Length: 106
Image 1: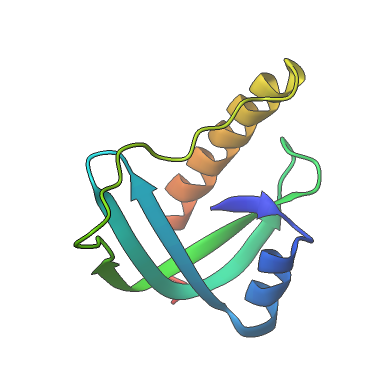
Image 2: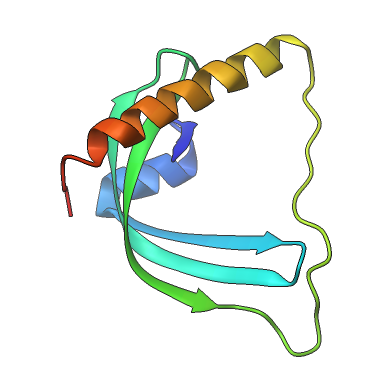
């Protein structure tokens, strides 16, 4: 996972190592993911970014009886330079994930 190295979520992870993610997507997908996390490294492709590893402890279905998820989060890049940054960051994450498959931190 990647995020800004000094945002509040990153600070919380460095403080206690706990993480809770929520995934919502079209097709009525809603899941809560609980885990332990650690910062692996600062990113080179995304200045100010960091790579975190998450060890998943629990995944639970968070779908609701009275609410249906029909569309996930959508975003629009604020400028053309971000497409290049995001592609480079994704490649860096893929490389880190490949390297971490051989190392177990949790």
